[in-house]
Length: 565
Image 1 (cartoon, helix red, strand yellow):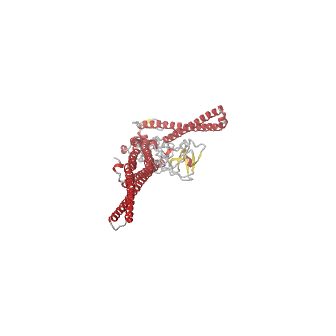
Image 2: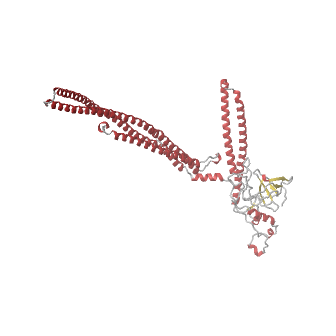
Image 3: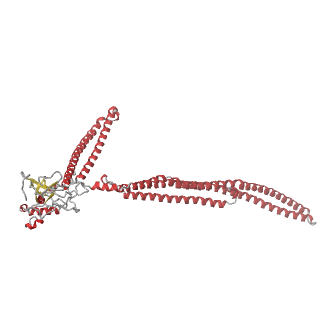
């Protein structure tokens, strides 16, 4: 169905329709523009959200829990998802909005051209019609004048009073008017024939051709809209596979959450390597009570044994105060100076930190070795091809790299020595614990100070309990002053020196000793390499103090002496 034949007389309506079509196309382009703006803003907000909840961290602060790792994986997938939204917006901007705006300008120019041709054709037809109408009017006038001249001639010809000259004059006028009427008739016929031809040409050739072009233009506009509709949807559909992978990645991250793994990480992070506190010893305060023969049911201790010298009050008081300090504390943790060998950390955490440092040093050493190999290869190339560079210019860098490698190897050896020391002490502590457990489960007898066993229950209150010394400090995330619950023995240790407190120490945790600045204490056990020195106050209270907090003076013959406070 053609506009040229069906709508030959609807030029004005076609003018309005084509203008509406272009307006509709531009309206759709505006819709696409607002749609891609929404996509861009959405992607921007998503990226800002990811940036907000995924701040930069140093290597040591990277999360290790599966729940945290899964969350950051979800953030990465969401960031990729935001990238796909940006791809959608970019495709819409170039393949839909930009294409529509360019096509709209082309349509406007083409429509203007076709409408101008239609108006020109209409103006020419109007001109032909005016010429035909003028010739028609002239022919009409000439015919009327000819009729008048004919009436006048006939009247004078029949009038007997009219002269011959008057009749001849009227006859000549009649012939003249008739001739002019004939000429007007011929002109009118020619103009009418020309107008009919132009009108047929106008409505059968010119207008159908122009309207056909307008119809083709409108159909192309409709096709372009359909294509852009499809492009609009394709821009979204093209990213669906990638978006699906992002969503699958989020689901996989959710499945990767492992509560058992997170719990084990907590154990690995905060494990101190210390043994749990042991049982508190029974303190018998009834030793000094005098008992008669009838009181034998109260105690099985022989009288001769009861006559023995009782334990000094100061020792009992010291034992009570020492036991009081052995409660499981969760209070404020005293700060200890950080040492290069991590001796301020508990054994297990010290071992982990040393192993971590060794791994890092090995990585740095490998980088230096790779750099050395690369420089040597470059040097060989320069030696074979001098035009590429001077081989001697690389020697300083090679020497520097070799020096760095030696320093790193020295550091690795030093840390490996500390690590072997920690592992050896942990092994010996495990053996002692196993020996203590065997003694604890002995069904009969008590261990004597010499290490022998006796079945005499009267020795119960004089048997020294096996105590282990405090360990070295450990991991920074843990309390560096957690000690084993009991000392090596209950008998007072000899004084081997004295010390002066350089700083105050609160000693809130078990096994530690409170001291004030400038306070003088007695040394009863030297620092075993773990950063702690065992000291005793004048009141008899014993405990461990940080070695770096005190100024120590050892007595020449103090070690092994039996000096008691």
